[in-house]
Image (tube, rainbow, N blue to C red; front, side):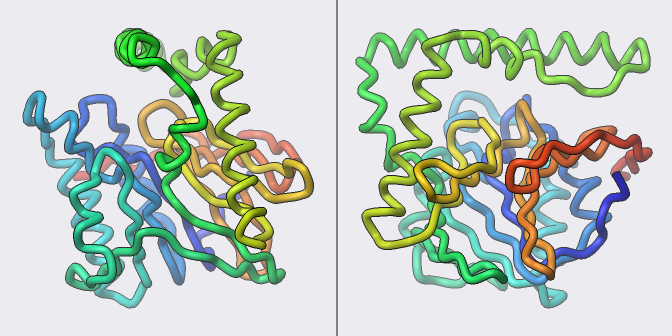
Length: 269
């Protein structure tokens, strides 16, 4: 695939700056190569939960924020919809933080006229119906998955292999995890349907997707911990789910899987 360099709109979420498993290096490579008219940051940009446990803020995390502000100051519209890990910023909904707008949620109209609800997705957690002990077990298991993912990719790099998400591979093979994802996706499109909209764009569950559910469009832009993915809209209205690591891979264009192509990644200075 030949990576585009200009899009109409980009959606990013679940970056988790301040968390040790954030892949800020890949995100910086993307931001430095691509221009767009609008960027929507769909929650969990900064991980205040992780930063309460321990302060972790390497130069690459600062550079992500600096680059986003630079793009906003240069004319790109940047809209920030806080999530649950950066929830305190919801107190500033309706305000403008420098050149960046802060919104609770929004409705986006695509080039082809589809009206899509945009929110982070944590408001749907009540549909998961997880008891407290199940939630705690899930958090512990997820931390273990990320630990294994970190070391697996450390050794892959040593042997010249590209990034691969062990965490996602394992999650997709756990029946309970798949069930939770299905419930979330259906709850999201139901909310869009309730509001008379054509679909939804969200994040939160770290499971990128671009598909139709019950006749409505479900878009999840993924994350920058496990999957390193984003959602884009081209100027001719094509929605595309992209993965951006050492390779740039088109995961879906409204249901059409694409092949990967290797592009050398520029390292942030």
